[in-house]
Amino acid sequence: MPKRRATITAVGHYVPEKVLTNRDLEKMVDTTDEWIRTRTGIEERRILEQGATSDLGAKAVAALLKNRGMRADEVEIIIVATVTPDMFFPSTACLVQEKVQAKNAWGFDVSAACSGFLFALITGAQFIETGAYKRVVVVGADKMSSITDYTDRNNCILFGDAAGAVLLEPTDDPSAGILDHILRCDGSGEAALHMRGGGSLNPPTHETVDKRLHYLYQDGKAVFKVAVVGMADVSVEIVERNGLKGTDIDWLVPHQANLRIIDATAKRMGIDKSKVMININRYGNTTAATIPLCLSEWWQSGMLRKDQKIVLAAFGAGYTWGSVLVRWTAEHQA
Ligand code: UT7
Image 1 (cartoon, rainbow, N blue to C red):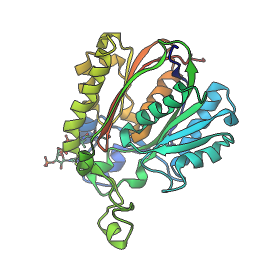
Image 2: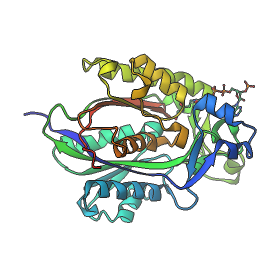
Image 3: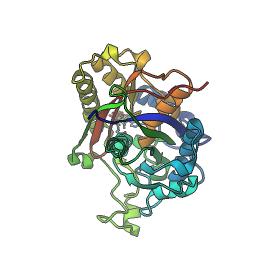
Image 4: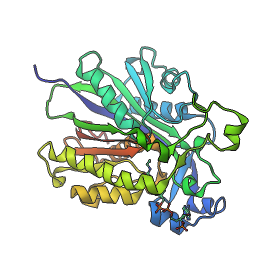
């Protein structure tokens, strides 16, 4: 029996209005616009002033439903990738479900940091491939400003808030949709990138607050070294094992953590920079949201078109990393 595949049939995103520029950050910590631009490629990022991750996610899902012309009660599953859930429980997926009034959906969260969207996407695809479900919404949403220490110049310049969402539906075309994936994790990466406060290891106390354990910690240099190799390795591997070359790929859709990591991945794959989705300059690192945000923006502008071959690639905390090969099927509606 031919394998039933999952394909992305609609996209949507949301970014909050408030813009935090490099110039603004110059007034908050000892940094410069020039340093941030040249070391990261970031010029500005968005900040959600009121509300939480579920508000970002719900707005992205609402945009997705509008783009697909679908009612919320037709959604069967909502999977939310996030490291900034509104609270430990209930899951952010439940809160999104309530906010969009997806009355017939169940759902859950996936925690894989910057690779969260890819982990959630492949999880969602399994429900379609088994034949059990037909409409799965996968959301990548993070309010990174809620765990960012705005006195730490190493990290506060990097992150922003956003959400993106995709709809997965079945296709009988074996050459369409989600064609292949490589996902990895290596928990030895915990030392270099974590938020240790608030969980069962360090339940919240005055001491955990004083030690700033409720903020994201990153040893940027250590993460950079493994990210630049890890993201490129799986991206090259997925192209090669599908009998393709970099020049066969229409778009590389990389996680937006650092422009230098993106450039190195494209170079290793033999992909021209004009075929790489880059919006890190406008949004910074929005963790689980970066990839669906790119997909949605490029689809909306008409540059991401039906039948194009694309590679999604990410690297993040865990460590977690991975790549996904997709033949795009969502038609652009002008
Ligand atoms: O998304 C999850 C995965 N995360 C990543 O992929 C992030 C990977 N890491 C990175 O992107 C980069 O390591 C950073 C952008 C975080 C940092 O860039 P870097 O080129 O690795 O800089 P560095 O940490 O080695 O710091 C270089 C210098 C240091 O000064 P000294 O020790 O050379 O005197 C820092 O103190 O730059 C200094 N520095 C800054 N200077 C101005 C660090 N942050 C800043 C800043 N402004 N904001």
